[in-house]
Length: 590
Image 1 (tube, rainbow, N blue to C red):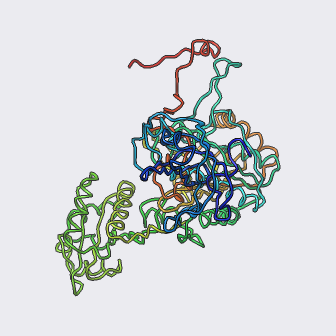
Image 2: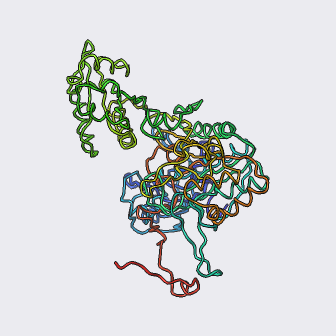
């Protein structure tokens, strides 16, 4: 027999009754039932009930074992007594009667329990992550993550993509976040950067004649942590294709991502045919470029109903052509208590309030706004929004560029408070036609709004002849349940168009050659039209596991202060290391 096990703790079945078996694992739970000990023995594969009674030669040692001790057990497989089977366990019909126990690894007093799903402080969970990972839910999440990545790989290979590994030590590149820099010992005073994304490399792979690339790529960004992005590093399903237009990318990616969601959605409905929503439409209807389409509410502009009306606050605002009034419908929300609650919520968000109209039986409008604008305008608003008795509408006014984020949050709040959101489904959509540029108020100049390597719609002609702020890009995202889970674009593969695009954002040709020399050179020697995207592995796994924090699906994450408190990173370098790197530390005073 094998030194440690003849079976795993998830393998024994009724067909094994009468045979001898050897198991090794962790003592998950120990119960004393009137002198008879029951040990739930756990390993990666499952859990088996071990029974030790006073007649067993193993009893004396069994009395000493505690939770999370690692033991080996030899014994006979037998049926569980009638009425004690456990249908929730694959091994639930049998138990192992112990004849011999060996302690392989005793455990000290536990800083957090493995049995059960009690919430513990993050500091404790991350410091003892090896214990945290033994807990059933987290262990299952990590295994699900691996299975999802396997499914992604299979889907990509099925679409004719080949997996490549791009360099980790590379050159610094403006991708929208700070780089992690790595000092070079061989070239003193210079630094490598960890890649924020394999963007330039994957385009160079297309320049090199490989037609379809993908990888599960590690990416590194020195940005502040938040719940839906881990500090330091994350993984993405990265892909690129040659000789394609936007529709070709959609046709390749949509079935892969749909299949992943269908496989791991646990029976929840998944969007079959993804809608295509232009960025501008998404912002006006949902107040965000990553809409949660499980919420059926859509906002509408209702400026005309308030222009020149008796509600002077809105009427005066509308004298400025930049200002508008938007309405958020609230089906079934037409009670004073709910409207007042929404108004108080808005004030808590730093707003002066949230105007509203309620509709009574017979279609009569009620509330301060209705009283000020009169029954005709109130009725016109009701008809435009498709509302009826017992419903309400909420209003935001001003410059949409300034209030759009709040309007989107209000739409979310109304939908959730009125229980209109179906949380048990996955709604996927393409968001398309992103603006190529945006105005940077800080720098007082035009800057790229998304990926600087995307192809502008209209190409070089648009760059030469259009107002930059009106140019759209062949740039697209995938949104799912209020999260952006992927982003991509058709690339700007013509060197003259690339130089012009950067010129409009304030970079001269020499800067482009210096910072993107590899790509610039490659574009001179026959660049194929190409495009692709990257999907966030961590975020997709988070959605499919039904958790709201990426730490629940990442095996060894950092804490909120970007520290690995298990391994003690970041840590100070030794004087010898600093001398080898020709570096002096100039840390701020504490």
